[in-house]
Image (cartoon, rainbow, N blue to C red; front, side, top):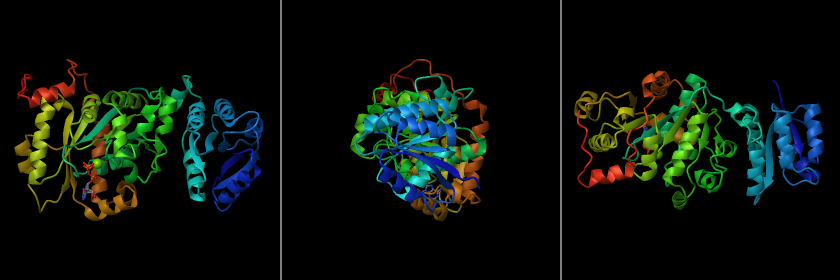
Amino acid sequence: MNSIKVLIVDDIANTREDIKRLLYFEEDITVVGEAGRGEEALQLTESLRPDVVLMDINMPGMDGIEATALIAERFPETTVVIISIQGEPEYLRKAMTAGARDYLVKPFSSNDLSETIRLAQKRAPRRPAGTAQVAANTKKSAPGKIITFFSSKGGVGKTTLACNLAISLLQETKKKVAIADINLQGGDVAVMLNITPKGTVAELVSEEDYLELSLLDGYLAPHISGIRVLPAPLRPEQAELVTAAQIEGILRHLKENFDFVIVDTAPSFGDITLSALETSDQVLLIATNTLPGLKHVKTDLEVIENLNVTHKVKLVLNQIAPEYGISIADIEKNLKNTPLAILPYDEKNVLSSINKGQPFILTQANSKISQSIGELSRKIASDKTIAIKELGAKKKFFEKLLTLRGESRVPARKA
Ligand SMILES: Nc1ncnc2c1ncn2[C@@H]1O[C@H](COP(=O)(O)OP(=O)(O)OP(=O)(O)O)[C@@H](O)[C@H]1O
Ligand SMILES: [Mg+2]
């Protein structure tokens, strides 16, 4: 097995010793060298060609930010992970912009350290910001597709399906996949994927240049499956810090840099969700086959029709147990809609997957629900019909929704 070669850069010898101790038992990681200054780090990177450099920020002489920028530029096959102390957000931001791939805040555990090194090594090298090179890492021939999971009813399985479908799309297509959690008050994508966010969308938009690719990239947490995750705020009150226009900007940016952008939403027609519906190429409306579920989805379809986005909406039925609930034939008749997918009720696999933070698509790949998700992702990946024309009149969705509520002047488009 090829061991991951690590260079430790820190001006404090004790810290270097501590890090070496933490990595001592990791058989797949070898510390090949250590440096106490930025200049030395560059020399050793040249001679030792480490896979990963663990870089301190504050050092005498050339600091970690400058050294990171030079390593990213001269040795793109080497990945830099910043090791910083609490209270250095500004430096950290600069280091990420300079080309660092990830960061660890001291003190960290042996597990945090080794996992971060493994993930960093897996990820493609990153170049310094502010140049066209940044795009090299994320280069794609055409803009990607934004696929939004929606239902104004809670608990139908939006988040569960969004997380598993994102991973399945990556497995099926080997393309770049990101998931954005815009359920700003109650998002749980990070929990479902067992990710401890280092930054969320709330901190991202507090940055003046939040649409700068290298900065955005630093906020996209890597998941072990290879997808990248933009987490929702950790606290509900932080939702207020994020506007619909910012979400729209972020989604459009992600679309430029990923082949698939999966969006998980809140169970409501708030302005954040509306801007996602507007920006999406495809909307998967999730429904269950219970009577309340059906009533909800009927209303959702009516609202969606009045928002002029019906053409990009596909129905997905979830939690379907054939022996219970309303029959699929009745649903189709009632909704005048054929579902794109029918996903089974599978309490055992779904619940244990959620509680362990391990998506069932990875751990229960042969289960019926994983197979159904795989089928759905193949349909989505091969679907050429989902490229959506921009909506003609740019009437704001909220205005439309309000008009709709107050005896519409927008004529309902009946087939
Ligand atoms: N196919 C399924 N079979 C069994 N249980 C499921 C299935 N899909 C989802 N669930 C369960 O339904 C519950 C709600 O799922 P999830 O959180 O994904 O819904 P949601 O639509 O995102 O909810 P919210 O609107 O509150 O964000 C979870 O406990 C999950 O275990
Ligand atoms: Mg959810």
